[in-house]
Amino acid sequence: GQNIDQPTEMTATEGAIVQINCTYQTSGFNGLFWYQQHAGEAPTFLSYNVLDGLEEKGRFSSFLSRSKGYSYLLLKELQMKDSASYLCAVVDSNYQLIWGAGTKLIIKP
Amino acid sequence: ETGVTQTPRHLVMGMTNKKSLKCEQHLGHNAMYWYKQSAKKPLELMFVYNFKEQTENNSVPSRFSPECPNSSHLFLHLNTLQPEDSALYLCASSQDLEQREAFFGQGTRLTVV
Image 1 (tube, each protein chain N blue to C red):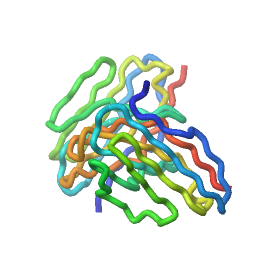
Image 2 (image 1 turned 120 degrees about the horizontal axis):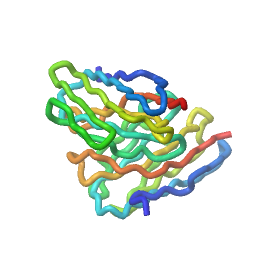
Image 3 (image 1 turned 60 degrees about the horizontal axis):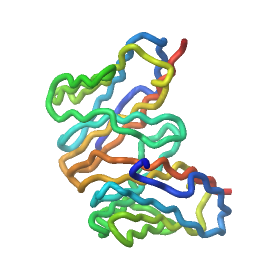
């Protein structure tokens, strides 16, 4: 079966750095997405990785290792507004999106 | 404008009611999706439309009936739902089926009583 694993919940301190991990087992791979979803709002696109390595975009970076079936989202200089759920999703060989259950990130002052 | 607009934002319905959810996208996308989001579970893909044609139905009960009159509009008709159908229903669109960067609407919070 196809599976995406990410931690259910994480807590971090304002101003710090946090890494949210995502591991996947899918039939084929055509890219990995990270989305941010604030409570009661729509998921919004953060990043897309299809090649190995680190993609940096401001305070957020996303890393992919296809051989390990692993990705992480790195958030630097955390702000209170970063409190949200972070969803990992993989595009399989049939271009189906396989979703993780999301990681709820709680930022404390 | 958000690009993908869903109405209503909140809906409470009895088990004998019929209601419809509406989704509209202004992005010129060809593919549209309905997802169900329940607490602490992965997004569940319900239906996929591409160029107005349904391409996927992921074993969704017949009490959910989608309709796609054109590439910009998508409806989800609800008929005699169960309390376990209470969830956030999200509409999304993408350029096409292979460009899966999805743009989501803000969802309809559905409560079945």
